[in-house]
Image 1 (cartoon, one colour):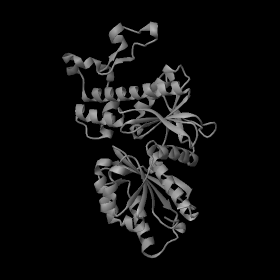
Image 2: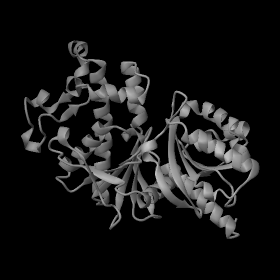
Image 3: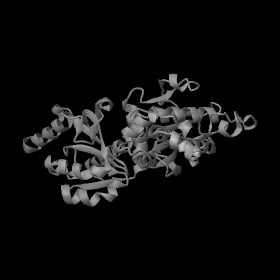
Image 4: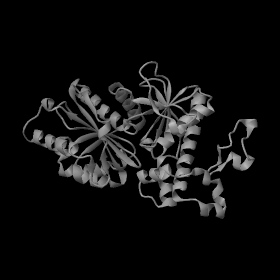
Length: 371
């Protein structure tokens, strides 16, 4: 691998989504000619001229980062995602663009980097250079935060979630330690002491994949976006049994408010109750169930580690204001204000960005004669 070997991609192949970060060099810094230049320009035109690729691929145009310097070149970062179950279509498109002729090695992370390694090699003639997904996640968070103003934010007015708004948060000074809760298909929780010192301390199999899978079973929806849309208009109190349903009000001895969920889906054991709920109510209840579980585990991890800031990332949070506000409220309420829930604009792209950074490291090692 060398400095002239373009294009530069970072891939994070997860259980539900593939995330791709593409570095677009400024034309003045292509440093190539002939067929290589023609191929690069064709690929750039394809990526930039589309926001949607087929039925499932999306370029998150609003998240693009301009004027980034990587590997001695200045350019822009583009962020693309598509469902993992259509990865074969992605490989066909990449083959048509002759991607392997331009670069036959791509840095990748996530479980799919192992699962689909053979497909990339046989269809594209591309070698996936694999890196640890949690390491890529942390490096990606730090890099994007260094490139973006107000990457971090939190939600205010937690006593009235309907009026809660995003507030920028400065994460550049005194940022360590913190907890990272990565919500993808499942959930991994990390304790981060520095840019290079971190460890996985917990997790749960009940994540975004659980929410989508159960919503598909219960409501017949077919996508994450559809499930979220249904949840926005649903009423989870028709599905969940609350403290007031058991006590007739608050459980004051232990400080449990009447509107607290005592049993997720607890009302669904009654046929009469089941006849009164809609698919929207079920979707909302599933979202509340998954989010409350994640929040509870995250809070316990923060308390055990004696860390006051909890950073939530992952594609489960994409356009998911309900979950973000619920997590914020839970962190604040149960910790009596000692824990702060933080979120990031680029949500689920940090692993892919970290893989791209590993590409830069490989190139530098090559130039320094270490590989």
